[in-house]
Length: 207
Image (tube, one colour):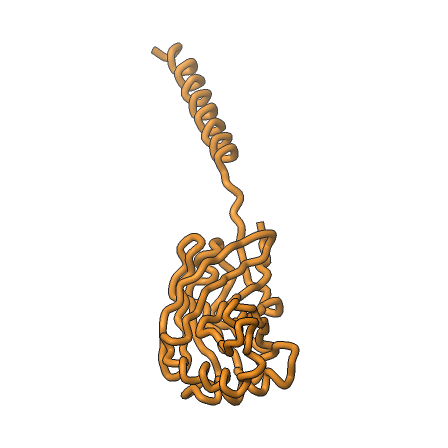
């Protein structure tokens, strides 16, 4: 019986060795490189597009100050932005036209309740759909928009109906103040209740 012990032991060690190496090779071949993402806070921009004239001519601007909180380094872009909070001082509004800026601050935002600062947070992120909670004029509403990620830049855009914040009166007040400036080719003075908002930032990747 002893003469069979060595061959069996040798075979057992051989099979164990082969099995171990095969598993390691499979793990290496099937392994997926994991990336971690974090927001470059200094790159954050929030811009807006308002519309005047019946033909809906865009007027663009943004905010010079944006504070974001609630983000960390994570291995998923969806998780990275989910729960992100922001605060935007209305006083930082900038359309590259100081006279226009003062009119918007005083006549539009000045006619809204509790709005020295725009506040909100990301409710959910699902693929290219992002749901945002925004507080303005004493109301908090959800805004649904589209997000994209290209070459390290994350962008979120959404159409905002100001009427859901009961801000139609503030829009009319601003249009009355700027009546002549909002007269289009058809002779009608019009300022639209719709605004497009855009959030953009650079995301640092560590792969």
